[in-house]
Amino acid sequence: MWTVNSFELPLNTVKDILDVSAESFTDKTEHGFRLCNNYTYNSTPGTTPLDPGTKCTGEVCEIDLSKSVCGIGGHYSTDRGDFHTHPAATSNPSAGDLLSLIWGTYKHGKRIDCRAGQRDKSLTCDYVEDAPEHPYNSDVINQLGSAYSTLSGDYTKYIDPFYAEWKRTGNCPVEANYPGFRETYDRIVRIGNGLTKRKSISFFNLSENIPIEEEKERKKKESLELSRAKVDEWLGRSIGGRSMDGGINETERKSDYPRTMQDCDTKYSIQQVRDMCKKLGISGSGAKKKICNDLIRTASLRGV
Image (cartoon, rainbow, N blue to C red):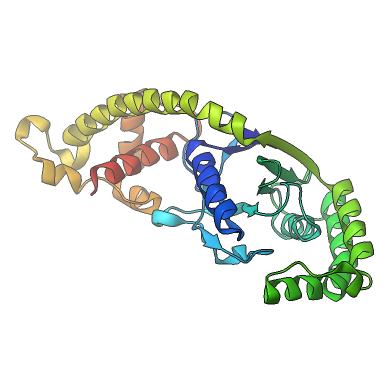
């Protein structure tokens, strides 16, 4: 639905972002979740869809997103970014947000950090341009590592005490009582902005696109229903040599649906998957993955 640096925030993620933001702006605490690549088949070529991890709630001025978990529902999943709210500020990144993105990209490779701001009613995402998918010895990664080692110590010394006081009292402290805070904060923001790129969209534009995306989802679901009918037919004719004409019942057929990608790999032979690919007219690289994901979705929707 919205793409940032080849990462796609699909309809379900955008809806959760808007819902979580509304809750955060009401209770005045930060809310958020991991952005997870669940390795599901995506219809938009060249993009990586990111689904929400488990939701968590923080304080008025911070949130610990390590409590958010990817891999919900048994899917293999990896953390490729973060989303959280700023209930008392704009969606621009704080010094801590930029430092977290620098560290996360240095350690794990290409990712994004997104925030929803109460003051500007917008979603803003930052990323490191040209960061590799996986960290390795490169100019970009080395530059991030050097920046983090330089800035993190000063953040701990000058900025952490300020936020600790804010968290303890619930009121924003007086900066003048924390020598070095503003200078350090502004320096981290300046260096962080020089290492990252940014993309924003208003809540209004996000919301305006939802009906369009819901219609796309409806059409996709209709297409999936047709595909599922073909899957049912294939299962009835091919699994274990049984025939639909032989009277296979629904209970038997349900037991043939895989629940995870691993289940799919162990349940079906390569030849069976090739037969299914041919039956459903699917070809090209990743064909088995597409078929298995279709079967997993079928099992999930049927509640088996």
